[in-house]
Length: 134
Image (cartoon, rainbow, N blue to C red; front, side, top):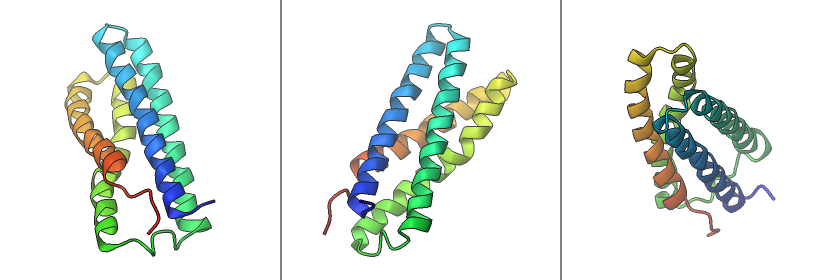
């Protein structure tokens, strides 16, 4: 059940699902609906962090040998993905805090930076991570 292809396919689904929420939050703020934007972002944050914790438990505790059979190319793809995903995960609570405190001077530049690293997270997570077995 917790094989590398299944876990990575699950990650791809999770990244895609929360990206839909992120797009909805961007649409909400573009429409001037700040409260809705904030609520969607809280849901985005909670769901993303839940997925991160769930997948970390699988990878670190339940099946720590999950990626042992990865080829060098697959391992490289995972490392590139993590190069975007880790900064995204670090920026998320900072973004949420700056948004909740209405600190626009901090929130807007962080939003641009976050969108760039999240775009990298999405592209590398959905299109480059292997979800088939060797």
